[in-house]
Length: 171
Image: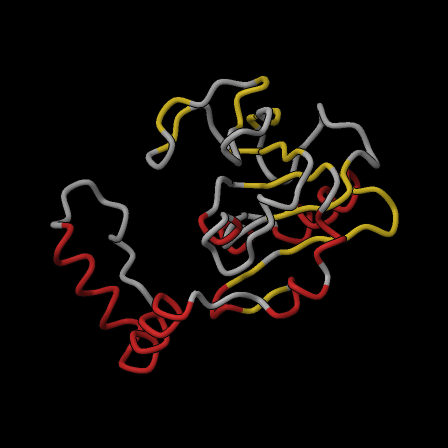
């Protein structure tokens, strides 16, 4: 597990990276190097690309995992992706403006950016999205069960969600 101070602005970035590498261990570091060299991709996604061709919703994006060079490159497949972030200003994204401002892929029209808590997507109509993405966000929610119920509400019946969590597991 990573130290709890990993997002502190006072932490030396080199010390942070060293702590991260120690937390991964030798096997984890070797796996990362192998994946970087070989361009590791999800075999499951390659076989099920059609699930991600419509209008999607990402919670907490943009995520490198879903980018063109990521493990599960969904962004190149999607017609459009909207996004939800928990605040109008984050350490990772800076200022976030609501509206058609979510850039998920070069050359694509931007998706809509929402600012909501993951458990309350009130301004989003039910049965709206063809798929849902969220990378390593659910475990940070104060009420993950409520979040999952809300995410299911905004997805069309019979659609799919890709929710990788800790230790590279997908739900």
